[in-house]
Image 1 (cartoon, rainbow, N blue to C red):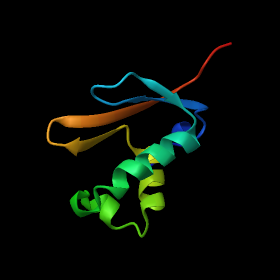
Image 2 (image 1 turned 90 degrees about the horizontal axis):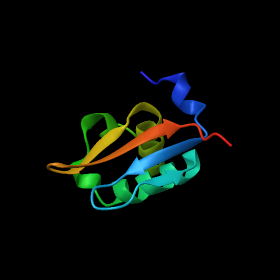
Image 3 (image 1 turned 30 degrees about the vertical axis):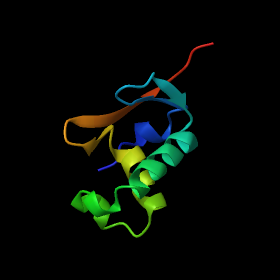
Image 4 (image 1 turned 120 degrees about the horizontal axis):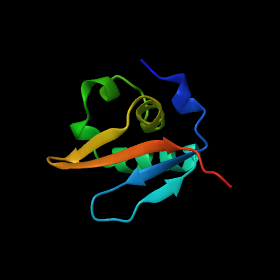
Length: 85
């Protein structure tokens, strides 16, 4: 159930509790998600467990989600943004 609009985003803003917001390209966001997911392989939701690699999990999450709970009560959030010049 992916939204094609997400694929066209030029930038994302990543919100991590306790850190400043960060603007990232889609590739940079996927890399951050991969780092985070690689540390949580034993605690993944079922939809991510079905995927065969951390890279595939991060791509799926980036393209279909906007939030991931990294621990109870603490979630990363990301949103597609368009920057105006």
